[in-house]
Amino acid sequence: MYNIPDNFNKELLVGLEVQQISFATNTIVIGLGQNSYLQIDCKFSLTTNGIESHFNVIKSTEATDLLKLLDKKITSVSFKNNDLTLVFEEENSLTIFPESNYESYVIVIDSVQTII
Image (cartoon, rainbow, N blue to C red):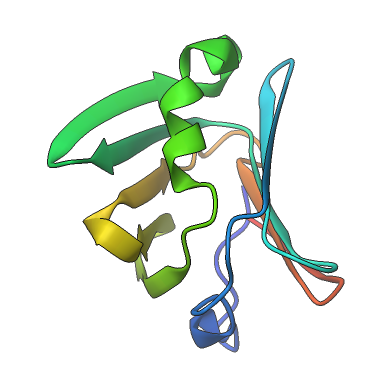
């Protein structure tokens, strides 16, 4: 796992809209528009309608609640340690919990890649 770079501008994620969600073995990719996406390779939680659910990407097919994020824009972004929390319209949120022994998630914004 890598740390979030000091110069990472989290505001670049604000306003991006979830346009596609792809489930694969041990990976979930959330498409955020042209040349931008979030790839999840670790544990995460999803809060929708005030209910928080925890998932492990190894069982990605159980995370179909992520589909509720389709067509929702990111309204805020925060980091605590290397945990990434995205808040979406309608107060939905996604928090990614990276693991220290391997690359846990990737953020690509306008083709610029950040690996955490």
